[in-house]
Length: 381
Image 1: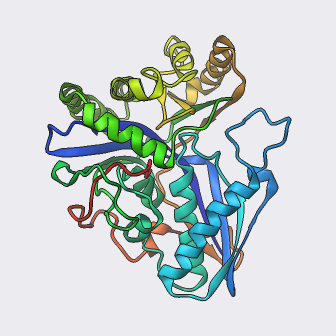
Image 2: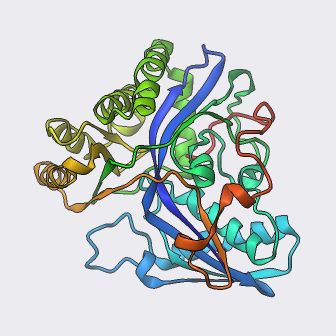
């Protein structure tokens, strides 16, 4: 039996959505230690998938409607496992999902689940996963490379985006693009923490609905916003992560998120999707939260803080939900500077497994990013 285990990720936004600039997208994000996706696999005849009900089941009493039923997760994983066995040329696999993330909540559930399934199935069959190479065949990594890059090595990631000349309005077939390469990566300081506020709200956009929204945003995007973001990235984000200044980092990524929201306002009903705006506004007034924003399409809201302010930040999160008049969940988590963990024969992937970047048969920094098509395709992160 093989196990793949990986934490969620936060997606702070893109550097550019305007067709006026020579490179499109360029995403920023960070890998988290938790919540986690844990997938077990072993060789089998055909594809068989089980999902532990406690990881995904939604009961009538559940306070978190973004948690989909076990059957929805099972169908997602069945598709990923079938694709994995086809790519690997193996007979089949028995796959068990031990832990999963809320689907389409801004935490990277799609790429995490697809990559973990691929890695577990490949390891069970003694094959390298090659997640970066194969992610496009699963429909992942079309715009943002944050999901794949943090699956490989964790940390803070800025990807290089795609050449704008390759943008098309028609969606390419799965596999007809490459994951954007990593332009910059930094370890996140040990004492940094990330507040997660998950309001009870509808799931974020995904699939064709997300593709349509992104295409519209790209076609209308104001290039001056990208110019402002570029300055924030080079003069504030990268220096602050390099020097370990959590306050400056939080303020910088929060501003990038707000500027991204100006691109998406017509599509999501505001700079932030409701009720995220009220939660972000409340958190922005809390001294324990150094910056707050919407992760991807939400509804998850993140806040940047540190170990010394973690308890106060959690209290601010609870207060923000109350002021917004919604229920939800609040947690404070660490970042991770390691990628997914792999283990075989029942060893604990969280403790004893090899990092995915050590065993996937490819250097995550070396990839031909200029191939393929850059039509907006999924969160990909």
